[in-house]
Length: 354
Image (cartoon, rainbow, N blue to C red; front, side, top):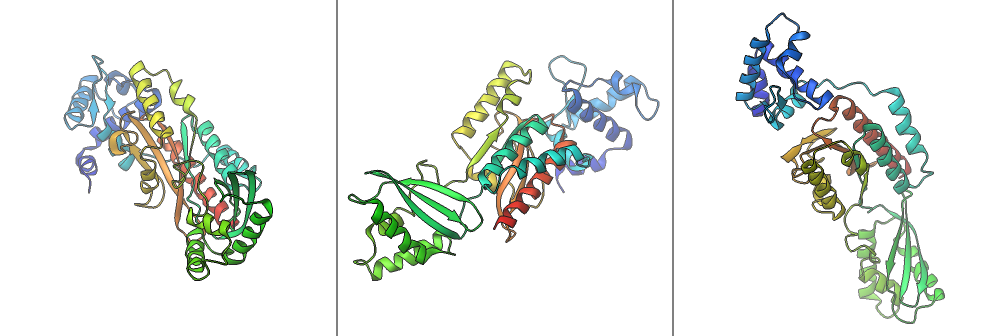
């Protein structure tokens, strides 16, 4: 049992209701909640002084805080965590939200990357936050491979995966290669690698290299030794992170220091710092996870919250994740079902296409 859960269980009914109303009021307005506001619609007739005393006790427990000189209170990070874990009421997914998510996914015409890009845009639009979509590392079985000569020292390899995903990778071919020799190399590789993943294909062809070094096509050998062609992006071995809705966070009327923290967050995202850890956040349990502030090092400096859920392939293996970043006063009750349904939908589509 976490400390937050233990504290929640120890609160009496009045303290619990005061705490819940403060958090809900803050999440709705973004402003500190005062005792007089709570007195007007409290379930029992109590004085503002009584509520102030309860709020002081909650502040002593580390669940509420008094910003600046305001008489009102806001939840601390510990308080938000306790609310999310024990008091959050998750709404049913709105049918209009469901329709928009499904319509967006249907527009991709079989292109997985396009579908994930559009899903990110839809998430950002629906939640008014910044969306994150982590695309899977593609180690799916290969269906077909082609080489395209771009220049004497530049070529493109097109990898068609069995799950419908298509990757284009740039590499430098050996000197003297012609379009004809590239076609022969592709034919050679297609005969060996169909139905195998890239890592499996690499092992098979490397064994062929050892046995038949003289007969193996030089371009095929070079391509395999380069790791089945190199990404033009030096960070290409990492999953691709799609970020949409940056303007939603930067145009939220935040104070200048908050805006600077948010800019820092996006600078980190664009430089792909800690992105490798992003998927690992979702692997410790099924379903939606909520990270508040410093609970996730990627978002600690900006003081943001992350609502994230993994999606799985046909083998029930986690291959990517979708999520929403926003201020800590996110509408968690509405966003959680949106993220959850989006992740399930993406997983179903990827499984069907594989």
